[in-house]
Image 1 (cartoon, rainbow, N blue to C red):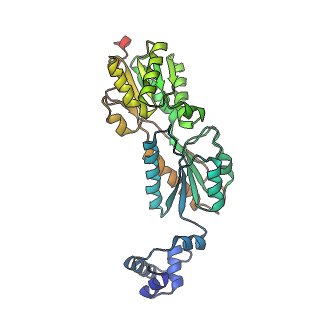
Image 2: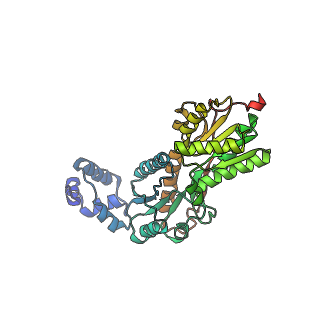
Image 3: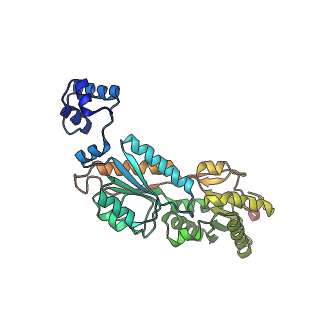
Length: 343
């Protein structure tokens, strides 16, 4: 393994000069810096992470708290995690992935141990138990999600309330008056997970404004669950002509069951989904959808947390907390059309 002393000899400088080039703690002339950096590349030198952390009091690690739950759609979460890791590397940081469901204990461990310079929290609940610690820790943190109280917090998310409203607006313009929401699993609402509740809130608010009727039914996404959910919807509201699907796992079973029941999409029933673009475009009937900007959310979360980390020591107002809600965009495809009564 190449040592710092060997780099210094190769570059014809002192070991302390190499250290200063690596840490940036002192100004080094451009020719000397370039000579040292050339020696580092040619020799393949990699600074010891532990020694670097001790010297700088930084670990160059971002902790990503991403609880893995069976009731959540993991592909979207993994897409966000990949975007976080990729963007972190652009800032010379690695990602420590915490997938347990420990809540405040995991956040406390990160803060107390110095494992990471910053935290990014996913699966945010409206009354998230991790937030009291996040608000008082000196380590910068960003939430991918929106709790009820955003005081002193930096958050990034899709604007899910606007998403729900946009889905309703689209169906309303097509003449639909009775619509249903096939939602996430019941446990997601029991935890009061932010994105799920905010989507339904947006749907209900806009439907009330437009005089439309709405049924919301949780669904775990399995074929049996979707079958039961559909049966309930059509038993309770036979006139339902539009469905908003928020649970990505329910999409294919839903389309299959509608086909088996002889309900043509979109002639008999229109379907709008909140899901990744590739899911909407790849189904048996191309879905009108609002895309989940997973990559953009992950990238923006890292940019925000790195901005706050870079301002450490400059006072709390150096990079003030901010809320970044990405506006939804609806893409019309083959799954929506005029309501039967409107034709």
